[in-house]
Each structure stands twice: as structure tokens, then as C-alpha cells.
Image 1 (tube, rainbow, N blue to C red):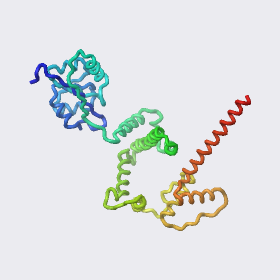
Image 2: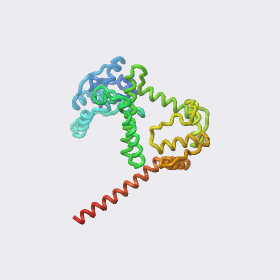
Image 3: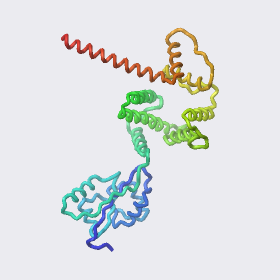
Image 4: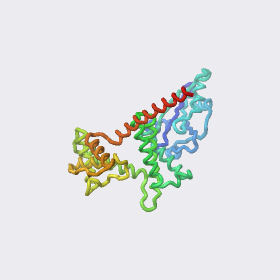
Length: 329
């Protein structure tokens, strides 16, 4: 039995909605079972059914800070199950009481009962995408074909952010590319004949990565990037069973990238293929792209870098012309 003058205890127990309800830490379960009173500020809290199944009586409501302090009189322990990751109104009220110096405060403790694992925010994205797909007049009508152009645009914007070295822009553009993946997976889940969802997409790439990295997940060894690439190409060839090195090369990609990709396939396969002879800039560009690939240069990246330099030169001229017009005016 608690002594009348014993200090009380308030435990603010936080959980994450990204972990399956009921999966609380052992210290959290111990604290809940030992508490004199358990309060929950959210009547829709996903943990409530599991606490009830565990024989824990939960009082629902939003107590004022003073009421909560009063409830700890006589050394009682009160656990407050917060909504989300905390309850700012309650914690602010307790902080004000403690700062006033007029109230003998109980011991205050923050107890995280469940934790987000790396990647947990992806669950938020999936939930948001589900709702948008159901309720947004535009998003609900989109198809794979209709979204295809956005995938290309977002990929280009990501490459631009990488080459510009803008970290904030990089983070944003990665999110835009990720959205395209989530959006397409959400649409695919609605297919009546061959549905698949984001878990199927993730499962496929996980299986592929494990199979193509036997030096990480198997008994093979690789000490250099070249050996890793050899593993990758060998396992990829086993998976695809291609009859030509040109299979799987998308012809719709930019011309320089297409030429470089074909040249890479030819070089990797050890084929001796002469460049087609013809007149015109196309054949000259093809030869330049093949030469760039052989020298380890991405021709698309090289041309974009030159394009940015050209853009900067244009802006210098424009600025000079504008200043000249101002002087003359």
C-alpha cells in the first residue's frame, strides 16, 4: 500500500501506429499492468482492444494537467496512453504546473512503448496514396499509361538534382520518384485479372537483389567492384535467358543513352561489331557515344554538363544586353 506522502508518478506512454497494435515493449506491458490507473486520450486508439484483452482497465478521456497530478496522490502511478507520438496539450499543461512552483509534482516519465523501424514512414505514404486513389477525382482515374510521362519527367528531375548537387532538391525529387512507384503499384492492385501490390513489388526486387548478390547472401566472394559486376551480369543472364545482347535495351530512351547502352552490351559480351557507316550527324553522334562509353564517360551526363555551361553563357550575354539597354535608355 502506498504511503500518503509518497511521490506519485505519471507515465506518458507513446506508441507508433506504424507497428501492429499489441506489439508493445516488455517494459510497457509491465508498467501498464502495475499502474493504479490507465488513461487514454484517444477513444479510437488502436491499442485499446488489445489492452482490454490483456485485462487492463482503461479510462477514456482528456484530463486536465491538475486533475492528472491529483490522481497521483498517495504515491499512485497513472499511465497516460497518448495519441500518436505524444499529447502536446497535456505535456504543456504539466510543464506549466511544474514551472509555477506552487504544486508538488509527481515523477514524470516518457515511455516509448513501440518504435518505428527504418522505412516505417513508407507505411504512411501507402495509406495516403490509398486515400488519394479513393477520394481524389483526378488520381482515381489515372492509369499506368496516363502516368508514364510523369515517371520520365520525375526521373529527369532527379538526375538534374543529383548533377546540381542540391541536397534539398535531391530529397524532394527522390520522393517524387517514389510516389510514381507507389502510385503504379496502387493501380496494379485493382487489376481484375493479374493484380499485384506494393508488397509484391518489394518482394520481387528483394528476391532479385539477394540472387544477384551471392557474395553478400551466399557463399561466393567478391573483393572488387569488377567482380561484383561480373556476379551481377552472370546471374542476370541466368534469369533472363536472352538470345541477344540487345534484348531488354529500351529503344525509347534518349539517343545517346541508347547508343552507350548498346555499346556497353557489345563490350561486355566481347563481340566484335563494326559501327554502321553512313552520312549524317546521327552516325557521328553514334560514334561519339560509343567512344564515350569505352572511355567510361556517360555521354548523356557529359552533354548535359556542356548544356548547363551553354545555358550559363547565354545568361551572361542576356545580362550584358539588359545592362546595355539600361545605360542607353
